[in-house]
Amino acid sequence: NYYAVIMAGGIGSRFWPVSTQKFPKQFHDMLGTGESLLQKTFSRLEKIVPASNILILTNERYLDLTLQQLPKISEKQVVLEPAMRNTAPCILLSALKIQKEDPDAVMLVAPSDHWIEDENSFKEDLEICFKNCENEDVLMTLGIPPTFPNTGYGYIECDANATSEIKKVNQFREKPDYETAKHFLSQGNYLWNAGIFLWSVKSIISAFEAHLPVMNALFSEGKPIYNTEGEEQFVAQNYGLAENISIDYGIMEKAKNVYVKEATFDWNDLGTWGALHDKLVKDINSNAIVRATTHLKEASGNMIFSEKDKLIVIDGLTDYIVVDKEDVMLIFPKEKEQEIKILLAEVANKH
Ligand code: GDD
Ligand code: MG
Image 1 (spheres, rainbow, N blue to C red):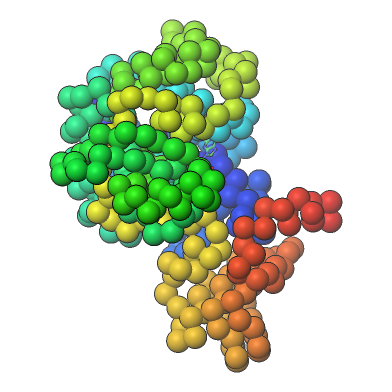
Image 2 (image 1 turned 90 degrees about the horizontal axis):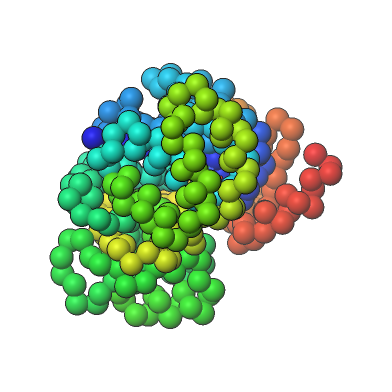
């Protein structure tokens, strides 16, 4: 059987002030379409995997938000983390839970906060990967042709001469520095890791055995009680003991059986306000506007976001992020968007 897990426990701090620890970006309607990023992710996956086989992995503080936004799922489909430990622990825990239900299961792991519009190509790509994982002991990722030396992504080196649809990965490098990323880009045989993974539960659990044995031992102890009433207590006691590490550093960089399928769909990880601006429909002066009613003069290239429909009047502003929220207003140059993380720490005691 096919399963999917959606990772929805991140904080999205570069989308402050909209994304906060209380209410992170995946639960927000960032695109102004009436659906949150998580809801969009769920409905995309529901066309590939039965809704009852989709698990949501998130921090325990987001249980209510998750159930409110996804009325189709039951509480037992939400895997609650008592502590933030990045993506490796939650993936292992969910793989063990799924394995108990179906030892031959193939699972897809997806982030909750990406922009993917072409759902048909997405579905076709994933179906090819699912089939491949049914028969082979492989860890699969989806690759995106890179367009600039982004240091926030994982890079996948594949065989330059390979022509097959699914390619063997020579090297997986998570978040290289700028010089290395530039070098990778100039080589031509590198792809960005889209953060969407597929594997059989058998293959991923053996990868944890080999590369994160301590974590594997910790969570394997819970096998007899996963999917039973005792699970909650076991997780509450043990989850926080797991190493804080992402699947990318913990498994993908080390495993030898990594394969990639180049994605045929348009993808954006919506990591920053600028990325959101890129993906939205814009007015003739390249302003992207979410929810606000605007009156603009001499204004261009701005990302204008309002939580409620509000009249926003601007005269003489170029390439800025303007965010209006009930309790915070942000007016910040788009070119400094990476610094919002730092800004957030600076204003923490004022807010
Ligand atoms: N459940 C849970 N628990 N989810 C988490 C946690 C956690 O502790 N930490 C992060 N997530 C979720 C985020 O909400 C997001 O949907 C996904 O896991 C990936 O985490 P990010 O923190 O956004 O990772 P990243 O963007 O730095 O890097 C990953 O994604 C890139 C593409 O967007 C890596 O896989 C890179 O290799 C990849 O290029
Ligand atoms: Mg991300």
